[in-house]
Length: 483
Image 1 (cartoon, rainbow, N blue to C red):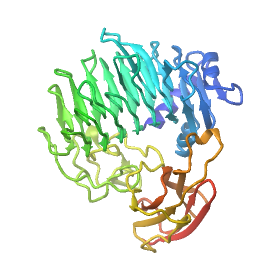
Image 2: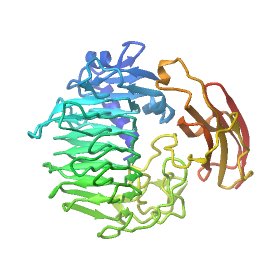
Image 3: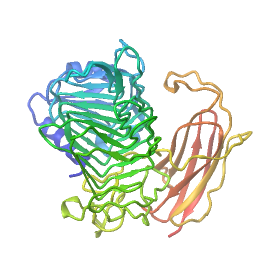
Image 4: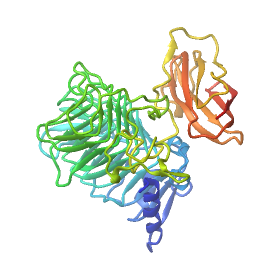
């Protein structure tokens, strides 16, 4: 079932409960935490776009915490509704979100950018010592649904603790469902992306990339697993790429005997001194594209052929229609062409490996994840510029070059750490009615010259506009998609 539909059904059920309310932030409650504190089981906390400098704790409330994303599946709400945990009341409780008081599967966290968290000093439940964990999200003894979030730029720093883990998420002693999230650019000394400690769960259709800093306990930069749980853990249809470890395994690591079903994933270009993509003798790995190869039915070792936005695979990718062939793993059907998969899946109905295949296939967010936007030259342009796309007209792919000059400092709390070495820049595409089609770039860029690839495979022929915007400039050009 589509996850947004799933949450809509949950919320609809709540609305029929006698004492269920929608708690609006900030119109009724000035902070997310104050709305949670006022909530009862079954309530929904609905958060309007904005940056919320908070460290949020569910405090045992079985509620839905969501941005406006759920109302219309408008992905810009994920980017613009931000929980920023960089200003905690106490430095030892610096996770952006904590869910650790027996919340159940009706508890949902959805539709946010979760960033700036520093983790929580946490005594391990199994006697391993004192740790700082869960930079973005800390989950324990709870069974929530975490979906359609961008969990990025969180960290767990060493200091007065044995080690640090779960820069993005730390999940322990529970059965969690983690669907359709972008987990990137988080740091910790092990499991910089995700830590699963005595945790079962379903971990499906996530893009886990560019997490770093792992050095302890086998590293497991992307996903680190320890011990088993009474219910299984399934790692399915994820794209796990470009994570790095100082030592150990930069991909998926599990201690001896730690079990997991690892199926239909792309695990590629994760780097360390060994470049080991998967390490664990309790894993069942099938129908995955694993760099350097891995024994198991249906596994391949071929360039996945990503495009430049969100790690979509190209139609020519060897991962198209190469996941598990059982019907239960099929991609959703295109309603206009039922024998073909619905975008962002490709090809026929058989499962595509990676985050955009399988029954949970969905666009995660309309923001680039930064793979096609590397600087193409070392020099810094004198001025900002936006080139005409090439080729133009195009079908279906074109390239857009732009230049970023030095940017002045900006005095605005929502642009923290903004300095003259670079700044936030967006490159967006619009149709002739002014509706945003996709965000190709939305990140901090150093001064330089860049190229971004735009793939219009899922769009109709026509005129489109692309706009480059920074603090002190807006540049717009027109292009033609001709099929």
